[in-house]
Amino acid sequence: MTKHSLLDEETINLYKTIGKNVKFFRMQKGLTQLELSLAMGYKSVSLVSAAELYTNNKHFNIEHLQKISKILNVPIAAFFEENTK
Image (cartoon, rainbow, N blue to C red; front, side):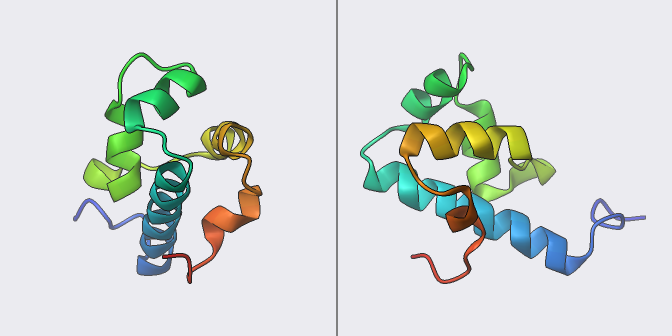
């Protein structure tokens, strides 16, 4: 049984797309991972750094995305778009 056995490739790719887009918009706004983490109410970058890269199956949940959307002033739907740089 592999780590990804409960998740299909499509879902994994979605998590990776979301992470990539969060990183893109965060950097576009000039925020560091720590600044975003602190604004979200976390004391370290562990969640943001892992979820941006989908490391160790860490990903953003809908609550995270809602907070990030408000912090970065980006529509939440933008995180799901596949063509963002």
